[in-house]
View (spheres, rainbow, N blue to C red):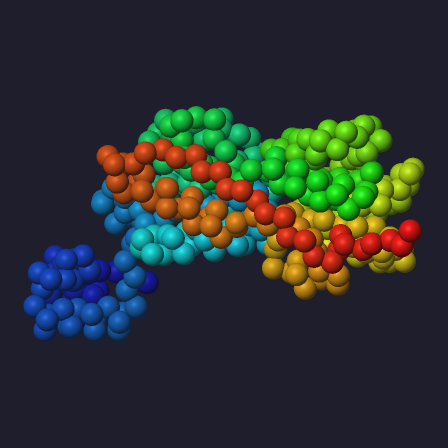
Length: 337
């Protein structure tokens, strides 16, 4: 790859003139600037962005760390982050932790070494994972995760309310026993949605031991949703309705039930969570809890950019969005008496 000396030789100018064209073009005459730009094009010269960032003391990069990049929920969140960052002239670097503390720590170290502006993170290990970064002066905003610290910005959704809305809807349809299919309860979102379900159980005056069947799976994806059918059908009595902790699990569950000749919602009503793009085009369309995914990412990026670019005016904020129940056909079958 050509270096700056080759550009200067070809344009017959000094190294300082090439530097000015790259960084302070207003200081160079139009004729000279065009000659240097032509030399850059002919040589294929690409400036060393990392070195430039170190000299300037800042970077246009923003780190975005999510737990599962394959989940459409995070795709829409990332779009919100990217739009806000792009409007501010920043660039997003996407990292996927896969719910692994080891991967999370490795990515955090790499982002710190790249001198990124800041990091948006859905943490695997809670606030302890980012304390070292903040001690080093790194701006961190929690994404899809509330913060317990008043000096840390966060953007999240009220998952307790979301779980409550889903369970209340099913109990209101006349179901007295529902299944709840979810990933490990060590995941904050799962634990809070479960709290919401239990709140609804108590509101209806039901016994959690008989009104709720918990089925824990190892991952939040379609394969685990389909595999959960075996445990669901082995339960006695069989729940007439199921709440899945995300739409991917619901999709897998519906696929597995169909293979067993079980119809949704005629035999089992199903509710998901997230309202990802495919939810409305399933057969039947999926009742789900809508999270403001795009808004979640956009607001988190805004908070990070405000803190990094205008720290003297920034006030830490903990934003909590409200989820919304979207009722579709998957939970609405009315049995004849």
